[in-house]
Amino acid sequence: MIRFTGITFNPNFADNAEKNFERAQQYVDSEVLRLSDPYVPMLTGTLKKSGTLGTVIGSGVVEYTAPYAKEQYYNNAGRGKEGLNAANGNKGLRGREWFERMKADHLDEIEHNVKEKFT
Image 1 (cartoon, one colour):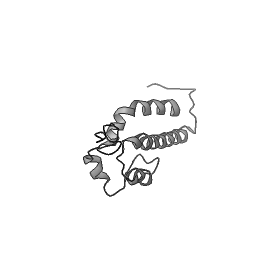
Image 2 (image 1 turned 90 degrees about the vertical axis):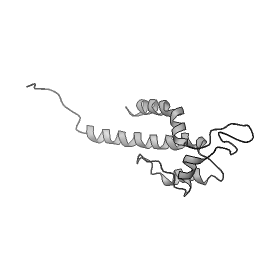
Image 3 (image 1 turned 60 degrees about the horizontal axis):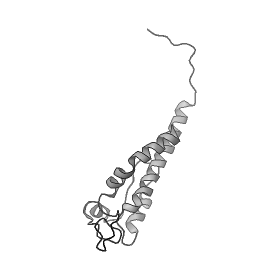
Image 4 (image 1 turned 45 degrees about the vertical axis):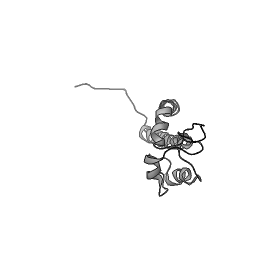
């Protein structure tokens, strides 16, 4: 058996850790929405806005609530003005699977910022 004596823990440790986690989750949710914005297909802007309106910041779930969001997420061809396959030849970022493509481009940045700000 090993006995540790003389070690004291901050009685507020659990509360502080929980608050830090909540703030970090809020940051991640906000960053996912912000960084996904240029990737979300846009005709009128309703799909983009549905992400902000459908997400409870800090819940860990980013939800696009437009009725056609799932269809656009999996099947958008990216042919719009700023799309992946824009007809005008100007390639953009907007198109299907916007979260996965944003994550591929920005995950390291999000992780780095969370570690820097919340640990």
